[in-house]
Image (cartoon, rainbow, N blue to C red):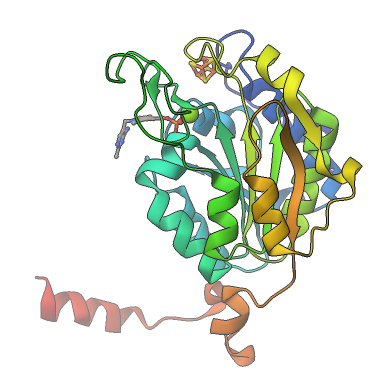
Length: 288
Ligand SMILES: Cc1ncc(C[n+]2csc(CCOP(=O)(O)OP(=O)(O)O)c2C)c(N)n1
Ligand code: SF4
Ligand SMILES: [Mg+2]
């Protein structure tokens, strides 16, 4: 079993005091311990942003990639070695802005990875521009003059459901107990599992605050929500006002990309032996 000491990251955490990323990191550690998967079989992949620094603060195999691209890199890691458990830590800007196309295609392909979106409604690292998840009217240093962001936000849960994801959930970084459970379910799920994690950015976002969420969030599982019904899940994902649902919206089993692509005798790509002289031949013929 993995211990808390083993997960201790070596780098100094640079997140602002009070940032919601701390609750997500703490939950991730508890989830990884609860999963009971060998340490060496877990891989984190992140993009660029405050949230994407997560792999530096927890001792796991990891790739800190480029803005908007963690999902395709994670897809490659998973397809090359199906024995690995692959988790993406991404921001709302990273995943729903530059990375949006990758998100949709990975959902429809049902790639067997878990995607944790640290959703703070802003591009935190680059000083608080409104992100694709910012609410209509949100005023930031880059939004047009009041009334602010002139469009509705991307709803990651609704988009995941509409794109074919086989698991969609929402957590809150201030509700670690439920977030740990959701993370464990998402990671164990076979297929594309999305968790939209509400994460206050205390430095830039003065509307999606701890107080805002503490007053509004509730848990769908406490209200008998049917997680097998995609349409009911879509309806639930549209709720945003005095009450904001968290918990598991949808969970179903269906073939994932690796199952559909690999013939049984092919096995893991990492075990294939390539004739490197053929690769050299290709380079010689077409590139050099
Ligand atoms: C290809 C590329 N485009 C844009 C940027 C600039 N950039 C870095 S982080 C970031 C936004 C981060 O926002 P988000 O993903 O929401 O993460 P947060 O900092 O809020 O956790 C942007 C636009 C970049 N580094 N690389
Ligand atoms: S800028 Fe916002 S998201 Fe980034 S570390 Fe500070 S509080 Fe967290
Ligand atoms: Mg963000």
